[in-house]
Image (tube, rainbow, N blue to C red):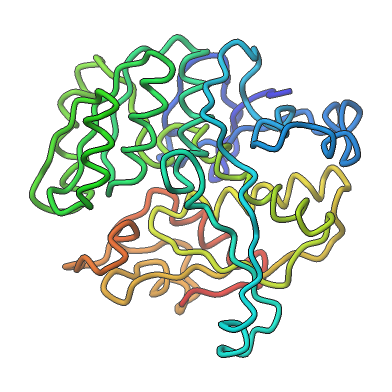
Length: 322
């Protein structure tokens, strides 16, 4: 049901039948679907009878031929009540969605599963990306599953387990001194040569499609009701952007009503470009100077490609950034 790619900044449609990176204006591209046709093909009652993984939402995902689906059983993670901690912070209805249970140990597996599946369908045989750790580990594992070569660059200070995961999956791993932007520079020459396809955060349009399934699951697990608030740790922001996209698609389908949960982006005080931009009602987040890696290393992203989309999601839902 995928029809085209669309630039959310300048508006034009792009052909989805060949590999694409950013729009000419520099914005990420978003996948669009024939939602009227999706609504005729499937409904919540039919979804309930399907296998409990993210591919239960296949009509709303970009892979057209099931033969290209690359899966390790990702998705449909539980939402666990946290009553004692909720009482301590005065949030009595607190739920935690445990993304640590997906195959590679983080929600990054969702984006890798769909991104690699679509790359395989489009004939891509070599993917490359910078990472803070978990995304690289996930893309390495799913590339191996699909029989695709992967080149990963990550900061030398990234968690040891993510380095080990990349090597175990057979990826070509480059460690660099510095942050994720330095890792990006390390593979720029490879990408410029055309030997690999760039699957950096939001520089291809299908990682976000995997991440958005968290939004579908949250709503379905709540009996097709939306929560009041979704709090999300934010670096590159793909998960938050994806959840916002999922909610918009569910509204168009008529599977949820007009009320949306407030989306909350949470960043480390040592690297908080989105928080700073939100506080001034900006449309763009300026790069964070001299970021410091905190215990939350994965969200140390001084300049997010999707900054406008993150901020749009917060403004649209009446959310905030902390």
